[in-house]
Image (cartoon, rainbow, N blue to C red; front, side, top):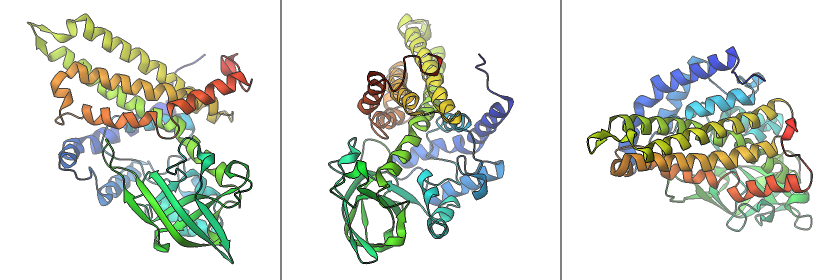
Amino acid sequence: MDFALSDEERAIRDTARDFITREVMPLEQEVLRRERAHRPGLDRAELRELQLKARAFGFWGLATPEEYGGMDLPAVTQSLIWTELGRTFVPFRFGGEADNILFHATEEQKREFLLPTIEGERVSCFAITEPGAGSDAANIRFRARRDGDDWILDGEKTFITNGNDADFAIVVAVTDPEKGARHGGATAFLVDRATGWRSEFIQTMGEGGPASLIFDGVRVPHRNILGEVGQGFDLGMQWIGKGRYTIPSHAIGIAERVLQMAIDHANTRETFGAKIGTNQAIQWMIADSETELEAARWLVLRAAWTVDQGMDPRHASSMGKLYGAGMVNRVVDRALQIHGGMGYTRELPIERWYRQVRLYRIFEGTDEMQRLIISRDLLRGYTRIGGHLA
């Protein structure tokens, strides 16, 4: 059994690390300064400039098929790159991406929505969550009713990432209440902001924030249905499933960076005439953090590996998401404790990460939902203890 990265994986990982170190990390102090002034860390033009620099490095469309100008990288390689992105808190992501379900679009829809999104000319958001339907996505009530060649959309979506910046939304709405969302009663629509929906910013404990999307009699042409009528819930689950290994991959990068900060501080900070790293209390926090970090790394890489093998990744991805999200919260908490009062200030990014990573246990499937999936798979015999090695 070989746990080593291939030469290609290592080369891509190292190139991504080099780009992040040279082009993104130098912006950290300015990002902190702006955020302390309640301004965005990067504006859209600055993000675009960085993405074009990354394109010159060869990084464009990590998951995007080659026919659309992307790299179409294996899931394991994508996981490694997401880990590198996690090493910095600058709100940067590589360009050339589009929501995975947009590739179900028709040729006309691809010209109008997919291709401009890949090129960074348009910004999308995915809207399934509602005030009364978060983890229970099958309980959505947002309605779309047929009116001739159009559909009329009414309702509210909430906690929508990119909802304030998007100029179009992928909206999952109930089109057949008798069937229910899970059984063919929901449909996905591509809805331009110009059709009349509006967004309202939601302030959170983290930087930036999601939005509520308000639809009041918004008219959408039938040709803007994504996929097929009744396919909306399945597309929604496909969209959510993508994050189950990318989110904890990002968490691993955060944990690596913050643990190194804790080690550096423990080796330089002196109290009572000795480095604090000589204290057993500090040593144990560092040891526990490294152990949990490594455990999360292999759970997440295994989840990505199952994707590349064409296996059903849901069980492995849920374990990676559950453990990775919990791990990064614990590691950041210990790093803050090791830094003492300075860790609690906004002079360092640790308190920022502390607020940021709390979300990882909630979005794209809460801890509780991951536990439900893992236990259900075992109790119903969908998988065996030990997975593919059993």
